[in-house]
Length: 447
Image (cartoon, rainbow, N blue to C red; front, side):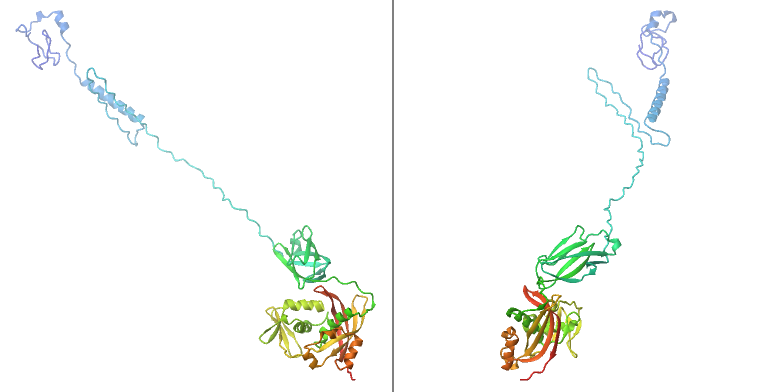
């Protein structure tokens, strides 16, 4: 039977609708009205209880959903003032078809958001920049000086084979007490250097004779000192005091040596005290007569280089010069010569006559190793001089008696007598002399 109110199917003997609770007035099978007396216990058992209302369940589900949402909100980090966590989509459960494997529901992955990053404070300790150690600037002496004994040296002369011990000092002394010195020489073939461990002293040995000076350099802590060193041949053994035999060779060597002065009309002088002006003039004329290749000509001047001038200054007089640029010297009472650009410049004097020669009469050895020489200066005629030209070399070999025959034959004329003091010297490996003093006076001669 069916409920006349809602149409729900009901048991045949139902007295009210199990769906809407409507009372059923009669039994459809009897066609009459419902009789209370006809109700039996079995019929009641078959009747369903009246349907309960569903709104309590709806309220309860809503409250549960709200509680679950709040719990999830709190678990996922939500809160007042924060960003609400996303609400997961509701799970929709579809009816599972009969005899079909249930479709696995994808697992809902609940990702717990990472806590907000916390700013980490990193303390960086500055590391000082690596820099190279600063070396102190080395001190430089104000001066370096070289001494022999207690004598300060700018130049010196030493004979071949001889040794001399020099010492060096840097100034100010208190700042360079423990400083080392280095010794070098411009030509090691001339000088041998043997310094001590710190170079404070050095033994200098002359290995050979050199035509000009060599430079000895001593340096210390950046400063240096140059010393000019002149060399000479070893001195011959000193002769015994007294007369010196004038054999042919000795006669020639002393005659030609003194003729270097007489041929240019030299005046009296002492080498140690004579002015450089005069000695340089003697050297220049000597070079012009005997070594014309050493003389150059420029703007009307006869020019002799400083090196060559010093070679013959040392050779004749045992002296050297070191003039400043532009230095001026006296040539005679009314003329001068100058030093410029490394040359001594003399006024040219073409046509001069050098027609004299010397013959030694007597030679005596002195106790100090020098010699005293007595001599006479002779003059040849200008005609003979220009025809030769110059003084014939045979005249330098004459002794006193031989030259007398030349005078008697009018081939030579005595014009001066003189005295000289000389000492032995070797030049370019050959024995000769250096002059210490030269003195002459004019004489009158008649046949």
